Amino acid sequence: MAKLAINGGAPIKKKPFPKWPVWDHHELNNLKEVIESGKWGSMQGDKVKTFTAKYAEHHQAKHGICVNSGTIALSIALKSSGIGCGEEVIVPGYTFVASATAILDVGAIPVFVDIDPQTYNIDVTKIEAAITKKTTAVMPVHFGGRPVDMDSLLKISKKHNLKIIEDAAQAWGSEWNHKKVGAIGDAGGFSFQSSKNVTSAEGGIILTNDDDIAKFCRSHSNCGRVDGGVWYEHYYLGGNFRMTEFQAAVLLAQFERYPEMKKKREKNAQFLSEHLSQIDGIEVMKNDPRITGNSIHLFIWRYKKEHFNNLPKAKFIEALQKEGIILSAGYSIPLYTQPLFKNLAFGPRGKRADVGVDYNSYFLPETERACYEEALWLPQFVMLGDEDDMKDIVNAVVKVKENINELKS
Image (cartoon, rainbow, N blue to C red; front, side):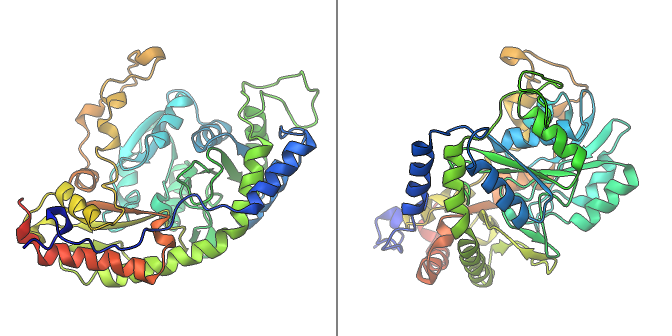
């Protein structure tokens, strides 16, 4: 008689994981205030201003500029840092497409570097080999909320005179040596999209400690206006990328409960790391005492099929999903193999734009291994469960391993 749920057996998970998003009367009350005020835009209301100040202060940043998405936050941060046409920006090959399209959006060229399999962040030891005379910036991605080795990156930046634009889209409150990420470099961008730990469905924020960068961020996100200028005077190329008062109303409520939720995610991540690492063929991310805070937007672990009868990753995931575990394979292909890059479809309506880089020649082995063979993601809302939920995850993996002969490779 089959034991695995994929073959008709009883699943491990008896109760559902927590739902997302989390909300209550605080969001409703804030939204009601905005509606009744009649001040729905950020230029008239005070919700965006209040949230911006709170978020920047929490992240130890001098300036915050709210915008309508995390992608735009990165694009404006690059532009405001002086990155422009034909310049190269180094970025990891294992990240969401927006990290690279933000670079393309300012006319710059993404140059991909492999990841460290122990962290899934950019491998800082490989950055210098990718630097050319055109390189002007590095975009580290604090992937899943785990901070990049900023000590090493800052040394490289100083040596080669490079800007650092942090993609902190998944890293609200994450810390490197007790310093919040996002404004450790020249500037950083965060996202508040639907899946994010702090969400208003869409939205983003730029953080920086640089007065000039902040000045241009405000201008580029507000139709090229300048602080203290006349409303219909436009000094720089910009657009309307402002956040609405409705989004900020939701974010203010979301952010108030975030610190406790972050603690819960970190506690559950510690439990999973301890117990999953004891299963032969499952590897968790390397511990690093310099990481003093982690948002755990994703709990990332690695699957070694040779310890599971050479069962393909996709089949292993399916077996766990049937046991009731919410699990993702992560990115299905490396970023540089996306049709966008293979076809250099950077122009209007996908028109080919030769940027002098042959993305078809890229092969980053750890990125490829993560996509096709090893990477497993647990989403952040799963990490809001209780200890029994975490035990269910571990027990499901053990169950699949002990009954691996029920599955064909």
